[in-house]
Length: 298
Image 1: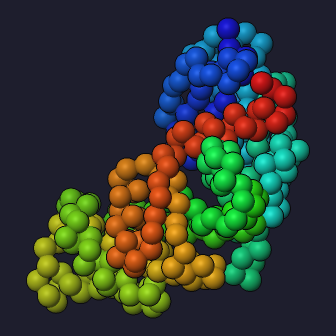
Image 2: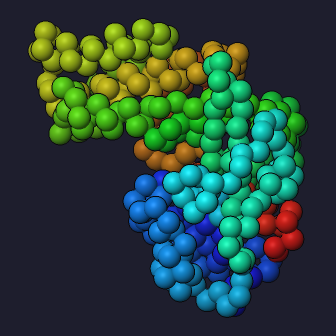
């Protein structure tokens, strides 16, 4: 019988693990109903009817992170403010139903306003928990995705971060603009041309138009637009975000799975930036286990 269910419930999918009392994984499953695919108020129903019956849970509680704690998820859980430690996350857990706890996410001042994230902090703390040496000094972590996150960790705390709209902008432009393309998305030669066209990430609206003009005016194949646009947007993000954070040229830890990990590594290498890698799913699980142990669930 499981002692705890932990879930990384994001915008597109749910990853869930049943754990025993030591934190070892007993079972694992993935579900296709992230919060963006649910009607308002549907999350508790899907949890009770689909997720929980999949595992032998008995009365075991559940711990969740990610978009499930947003205003389009189960219930809006107030953000913890940066700088934030793992203990701050633990102290800010909210019980949204009997035995169901959700982590808070993080908020930080940024670009004259504020920036927010949910779930990425769990991966970051999971990575930090994997090695005592990671809890000293400064680290720049990049978590690519629909809304990429760049987190600065200093002496075991997330002190600040920046989000980038890269993945969603790519999807919108590819599906609903003059840049529509059914071609191969990751032709690396064309991707590299897009990286070069990104420059320093400035004048991005002007640079995006080159994805159109290279076809209309320079004879490029329309099917290559997806790869070019991917390189252009990732290249602009990789050039501009570390600079805005004041960390241009510093080594980057990529918490990501393929193919994004390879594409971001390629973009960073082009700029002479050293990278190390960690898989996103194990980092999320490690973070959930660290939270659970700190709260006494394990």
